[in-house]
Image 1 (cartoon, rainbow, N blue to C red):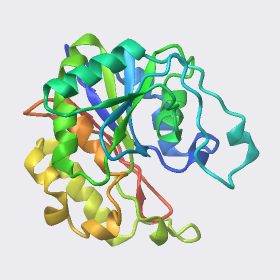
Image 2 (cartoon, rainbow, N blue to C red):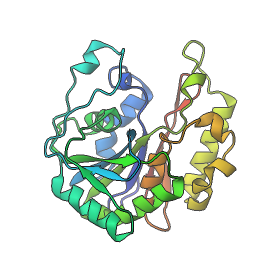
Image 3 (cartoon, one colour):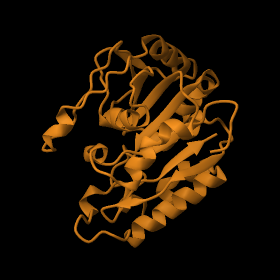
Image 4 (cartoon, one colour):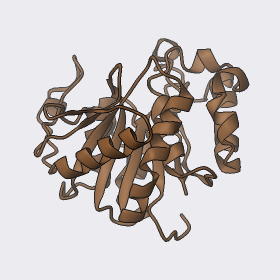
Length: 262
């Protein structure tokens, strides 16, 4: 990653919760993440797993580690990420969004779901950086989430890292866990389109993904795992510069691509 006078915003594909237990190229990438960006003053995790009708930001002083999944190995349920929260930053985010005409709730009870704590635990295992979550609104579109991100852009100059945590592709019904060594052509085509649009900084192309991307609905039958990308895109400002940080596939069609926006 090229040096930047202010913090980038990033998007990561967080995969299944078991990613944190099993060696893979994506796990190794996420474990190196803390060395790829300057040390943040705080982390804002925009997680695909916290879905609300209206924007909301978590304001817990000590957010719980939420195990928002069932039927996984017992070792996962024993993991805790005891990082401090950031109540003052939560209030500031609500004010920034309010000034942009986006009414935002603060939630003192929301903890860190695995979209927040899995990347954070790998990238910043000391758990000494304040972290909070920002919800996505599956009933709202990519343009809405980009506007949310644009409102957060001033925080980057203060060392705050906006992390969109979702999935570059996310059709769980189409996963091939047996013979999926090679990515499915429809998933590869979408991922290629996505990476090319990110590198061009083509926000209009990305926001219009449902009309422009190949096999858009095959790759994202629902929107929630793609929406965090637009918050990160917006946080880079009106003219973002994109960079591919990582590419790879799991189970034949789950893209693990990650990006930085400057």
